[in-house]
Every structure is written in C-alpha cells, then in structure tokens.
Image 1 (cartoon, rainbow, N blue to C red):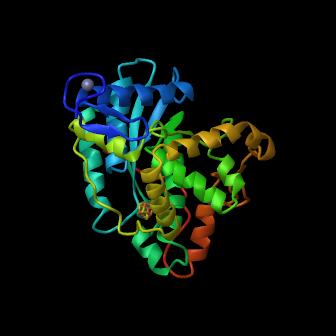
Image 2: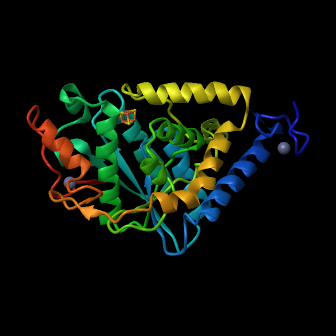
Image 3: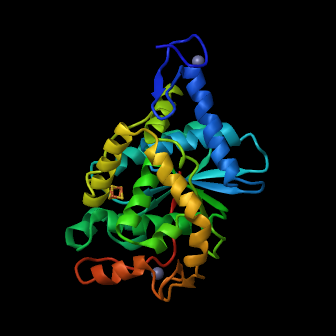
Length: 316
Ligand code: SF4
Ligand SMILES: [Zn+2]
Ligand SMILES: [Zn+2]
C-alpha cells in the first residue's frame, strides 16, 4: 500500500482517518500533532523548567527524546529527567539503566529517586503485607516522589508520557465508578501551591503511534511489563476499549473530546479546591494527612517503613 501523501510505501494505516503513512509522513504527522497539543493546552511556555518523568519504558523514553529533540533548542526552556525506582525485582533495575542511557545520550540532568531510600521499604516489601493492590501503593508513592523532587529542583512543569489509550481508560473508569471529582481533576484548572503542574504531551496520540514513532526514529525501546501490571479493572476497561476501537475506529478520541466538552460544566460543578499541607510531611493534599503518610501509618504495623522526612535522590 502507498502513502496517502506521496509515492512511498506505507508503514502505518491510521484506521480512524483511513490514511496510510510512509515513514517520513508519519514522523511529520506525529510531531505536528504533539506540538499542536502542547501549544493548544499551553503545556510548555517561556521560562518553563520541565521535569520529565522517565521510567525508562517505551513511552517515557520516546517522550524524553521527543521533548529534547523538539524543544531543547529554545534558550528560554530547561529540561531534566526524574526516574522513580519503586523497588520491583527483575523489572525496574533494567528500565532505570535504560533511563540513564537515554539521558546520557541526550545530555540532560537526571535524578533517580528510590522509594526504599525515602520510605524505608521497597514496593515488593510493601505489597507482601499491604491490603491494597500493588498499583495503588505504587501510584501514590511515585506521584509523591515525582512532585516533591520536581518542586525541590525548581521545575515549573512535570511531563508524563500518558497517551490517548491511558487517558480514555482513566476517563471511562471514573465514569464507571461515578467518581466525578476525580474526572474533573483530569482537566487542568489553576495552579496549586506546592503542586508542580502536570502536562501530558502524548494525550491525543494512540499508544501504538507513540511506539511506531519511537521505533521509526530508532530509539532503543524496551517492552518489559511490570510483574504487577494486571490491574483487574483497568485491564477490563482496556480490553473493552480495544475491541470497541477495533470495530469503530476513533472512539478513544471521542472519549477525550467528551471530557473536553464537559470541562466548562465540570469546572462549575466540581471546582478545584485549595489544597492543605499534610500535617505529617507538609506535602500538598486535599485531606489533613496525605495518602502516602496514611499508607505509611497503615503499613507500619507490618513492616519497617517511615514517613519521608527529607528527600533523598541520586544525581546521575
Ligand atoms: S503496573 Fe502498577 S505496580 Fe507496576 S509500575 Fe505500574 S503502577 Fe507500579
Ligand atoms: Zn509519504
Ligand atoms: Zn504526608
């Protein structure tokens, strides 16, 4: 099959648009699309210091390359990467090494932050005794360390590699759970003190487009899966959306558009509340005590774990 824009062989069929892309036109489509998302949502602006959440997996590796290759020529911007090492045996060590290679190659500062060094226990130890799912603990401790590290290193934005598949799953899960507060939190509203604003440059491109772009650009991508990755509910929603998208291409885009159309109403019905500082650690939270400190309290009876007092990170 030929490219819809030139005479070269196509490498990708975009099912929702019916267009075929050769390598050159796919790269150009992808870059234009992501740059358009960044511009439309004013994700990166003059003076920004962008911390990139780089796990070393395929999506965040591609994001790091994308941001540095497309934006680091601008003197009014600065970038560095943060990798959280949750302490997951036979998995995280390898991606941390890939992350180090990526930042060495791109010549940007890189900080590795360990859950164990900051809280006293690895995720593997936590999940042995905790009553929640591994991802519940992982998500809370990772977000905590990402935000705190980004803020202490003076970042103004925190870029994550969430793509259209992730976003549409999260939106649908919030609807299914009738969690409209959480749904509203997906819409960027105003800045909150101590919370570094998150940006998701890949939120309008499919996961497979991110991977194809990364492969066509020749980045070294690894496809290892976290051993805890089979979250029952997210996996069910993911599989449902996969089937739905196969039958009716473009539905994931409509889910994202639905949220955008609802955003003005949600800002009124579920306005952003001012955050407090956690009574224990001082980090921003909507409660009196942040979720990380609550988990520590709950787990302390079972394992040796403690509140994160001062942040520990390793500069690579
Ligand atoms: S799959 Fe779950 S436990 Fe594994 S890295 Fe992702 S959030 Fe953490
Ligand atoms: Zn072409
Ligand atoms: Zn706290």
